[in-house]
Length: 180
Image 1 (tube, helix red, strand yellow):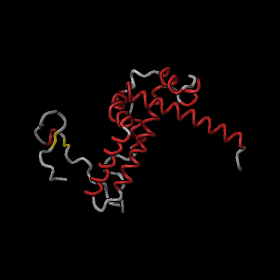
Image 2: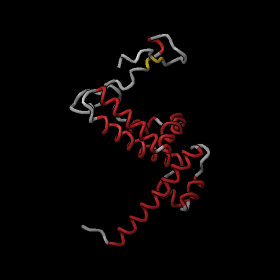
Image 3: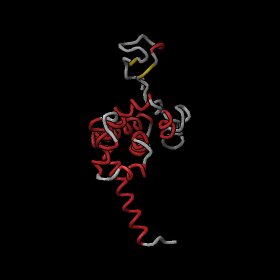
Image 4: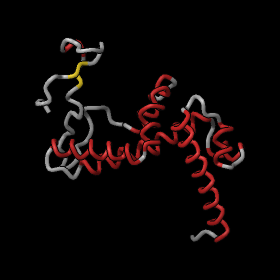
């Protein structure tokens, strides 16, 4: 059943309002940081009322989590899509890393949000978001292409107990890159 034209226009207006809020939040979170940004800052930049903000989000943290899930999910999809075109695990790894780095350069605001600002959220319960974005635990993920298992994407990082630490307790960078 087709929706009336008036309903379609209303839905489009609501979606534009939500997009303005999300874009304002992304710019502010990336520009001045999550902790410094207030809901007042977001609604002022988006040119909407506070009630419009709370129509979509329960809190600033809810908005931040939604933004992380949306942008992080899109980045993961792009990385895995590019990686899946590789012929072997070395090429898939190279293609995936290349897509990630290029995406970070193309959208530095998203990179800052995902890499810098989301770190503090982990201490406030970011584990739930991580489980929604990365539902399969490592080692049980499906292959990138053709049903092959996913290779260890970071063979350079090893627990400190496995080797003498170079400079930080807990992590050890291997000296040889030949193990990839």
